[in-house]
Image 1 (spheres, rainbow, N blue to C red):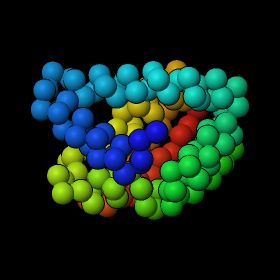
Image 2: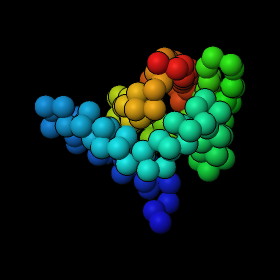
Image 3: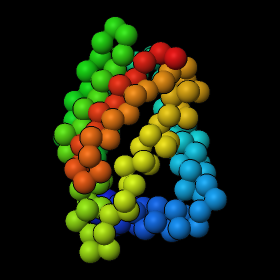
Length: 139
């Protein structure tokens, strides 16, 4: 398995390459990633709804060492990322972080949520800070 530091740097360079290609190549890549993620969480999201999403992101928080909280409400799931380890690693990179690095999360999350019958508001607080907010609602 590739160490996460190397994976994030590789991912960062893939984003730069696809963005430079133009023609929607980067957005197509996000959709491909989203389709791959369906194997891991679409059934859970459909079956257990917001509670299943909370369980998924709580596990991701541990696996990826995220400083984040997931708060489940009756009508929504709120995720607050206080320190994204992925963007932090991309920023700590002599090649420089891709200027729209943060777009990859909503790029794969939104299509997946739509297939599960949900939508989200995504607040990229500041592209130079590894923080964001995601609020998920039934569609």
